Image 1 (cartoon, rainbow, N blue to C red):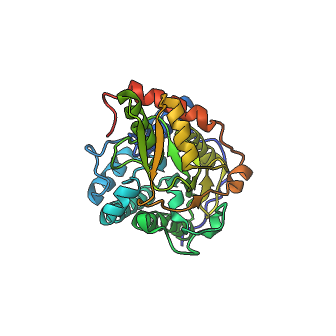
Image 2 (cartoon, rainbow, N blue to C red):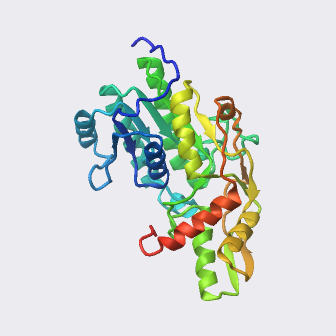
Length: 324
């Protein structure tokens, strides 16, 4: 077993090579923007067309060539309830291969600091609220996205194993529901907030009298702006070292009904809002306990109503080229 590094949280070298895996996605692009704003001058990214992270040989060759000192692993196959429920094999297989390849290559090529990003869906469906980090593996997962959750849990376990066996100060962060510029607004593949933005914007443009949403609207969800998430990632890399994954969220939640009304107001939709209770709600509540993050010295700063409004503006400005 390798000796543990004497890691002391400190500012990262702004001139060092920093690889952001998944730099074109919602989270990765926000992390890239934040690192640029924070003065990092040697950022490295590859599109999926340039580097297939499921190809182990290609990933090892990339690390051998680029030699990053720091890595954020934000690359993943992601989707909403429908996508996760329809393609569980894809979500399990693709994410496992991406994670194992990147983490193994990073270890072999001496990456100093690495942050693995997961999702709050790793926690049991009926976990005590707000969900603490130690709730992991204490109960059954939500069936509609259990394959994705298992893949992400495996990533957390690999980070912990690397810490134990090789002494590397790598960490994991589990964000709550994220939203913001660069999101996936596809009608069949998106998460709840971007799906609502698209649905209500189209309804407002068409002058529709009613909009029907999935489920009852009663589940409660927590939402974090992706720019806040990006800021939290850098803060953790510079200020946190521990085996446990760290929850990243706001510490507050709202019902999906309240969210729908907020989105309708942001896009200017004034018709009726209806609910199809025959469709699945998913987990009844999912609020993260963010006390560990607060103890590490960070808290969210973008208020939800403000964040939704700016996301709607970005969506409309980029409608011609938007994903989905």
